[in-house]
Length: 564
Image 1 (spheres, rainbow, N blue to C red):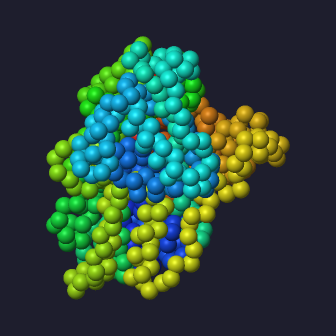
Image 2: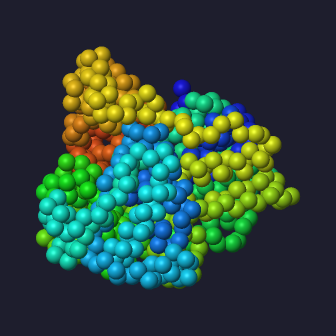
């Protein structure tokens, strides 16, 4: 079994990777997956858990980036829309169509400046009325026709829009509707890509809680952040895909140039059954007074996601949502939904992360490019390996980004590409029906074969796609639900611990499940979860108590959770 300890044993036995990938976020793992599809093994190391940095702090959208048209990044939008459409197919268990409404309070405001921005004559964001938004959406539709699965845009006048969403404010003149996609569980997709890579290429290894360090003896030093054990590996190619930590990794490898100028984005999970009903399945994507973009949409029957901020930050570990950001998000939402009065008591979970954007001059953060670029450094006498460094990168385009990095690596190794990952289903999307009727039949069959009731099988299918069959089997054999955490079973958690390289209690609570987003974590539930996990991960009583205390503190202090 490919446990973390088994992978460490291989390192101790002298495992010699040709490729070292530093960073276990979506772009590092996407590169790992692409190389594995070519039969090329890599060693991937991540200082924390997989997807524990910026990859766990997005707006949970798979989108073309409508606002990137404003800054003239048409190629990025075209690429993003193609990748969005591929993910709707290849990750259909966690990526779903999302109708988006853009509330508009004028028709012509900002038209002239929008043209200047599109032509790169200025990059400063400004107001946008219905006409420039309409023109942008016409381009958006055209760019999205490759592998298209969703309708083109349409416009509604205010009266028609209010019939569907009556809480929209009195200043509304029109609404633009288009479709993008949401990803219900991005952290799960990262874990599935790791598993898919290792199924294709069994000699590949991805190790969480393993930090890359300085140059040593012609190689790169690695440190187990849990035990302190150290290793040295001597790859032919190193990929720095560490996101917001790129500059720190570059410094360890002998580079002084600063490359990253991050911005922090914060999000709030709000509990409001009434607002979920009012929005009727639509995401509101609205412009703020300072010409940023915010959004709100339902992520459950009584929960919504509200975001995001965009504040400059030079600290990659700047993961705290501030009081000022909460005030800002509430204030801007009230402009378009004046009858909605949210309070801090409505917040059940908060999160933040630093976007690894390219270093830029002072100015509006919305003008900073969201595209990615690769910097390729040939080997030297002091650093006897090629280095490929990724600057930027977004969730939606991770596959093509990983493909581009892999092509550079393969060229350096003198290896030809075998195939594209463009048509490869991911994790639980393999064998999972796309159409609703076929999914209903899948759940019915699962109920009959597992002995679990139909509603439970529907929950498992929504969480895991086709892998729900394995989860249902584990649950049937080890079927007690976890006291104090609604909707999760001991069998389900046992399978996650066995197959997904879980190392800490927080890995389960924050990334392998959606417990925090669902608002189901209680004090008794955390204790029961720790007691379930302890024998599976060989924790003694002291270790279990330490994990419980650390996770509780993290949830309360960083994520603003009330645990009772």
